[in-house]
Image 1 (cartoon, one colour):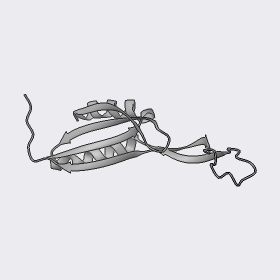
Image 2: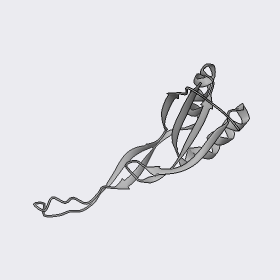
Image 3: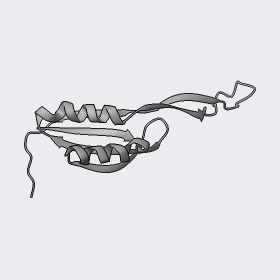
Length: 109
């Protein structure tokens, strides 16, 4: 048995949660924050049998896409510069970060 920890962008979480239900995967959904943008994420905890891990990973890959987002660059703290203007930068956000962990024991009460 494996535990899959999937951290996905909030924009993808509803669609992914619906797909988990439709395909019969049980998942616990947690709100989380972090990363470069300190933006809201959703963390899913999914316990699955070893033979179903690839199916879950494929489902996540299908439903969690990367996208480009424009943000303002952080102000410079280099006081030797004459100007510390911020400027827009495009960064890639979204997708999913996954951890697949072995589970020694599973019990449900």
